[in-house]
Image (cartoon, rainbow, N blue to C red):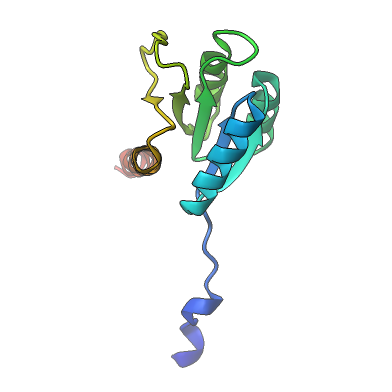
Amino acid sequence: MASSIRKASELEFELARVLLVDDDLTSRLTLKTVLEAGGYAVDSAASAAEAVGKLDASQYELVLSDLQMESPEAGLKVLAHARLMDYKPATALFTSYHNSQPDLRRSVLIKPEDVPGLLGKVADLISQRAARIVARQLRRVN
């Protein structure tokens, strides 16, 4: 029995994967550092096109995109592409523009200045995604 029980130090933990999309290098590096310190594995992209390529090549639990990048709607385009993926990542927008009034019909808007709020919202989005996956699996079984 002892041989079948692995020590905690031998267990491999898989961190939730986040795709962070922002054209501003300083913001991207800062948010990447904050998210990694919060316990997430973070890939980053500097444009909507780069993000689409990463979404097609890898799977993420969350796609977190700046709203305004190379165009005012670039972030919405990234989220729209993410929602088409079979693995259905959670999605959210963030913006540094305080007067921004984007069309957020199905998007969550996060203000990155509030670090505890940002990490809490990221955790909520990832856990909600996990709950949706479990619910879908249970529906398939029944």
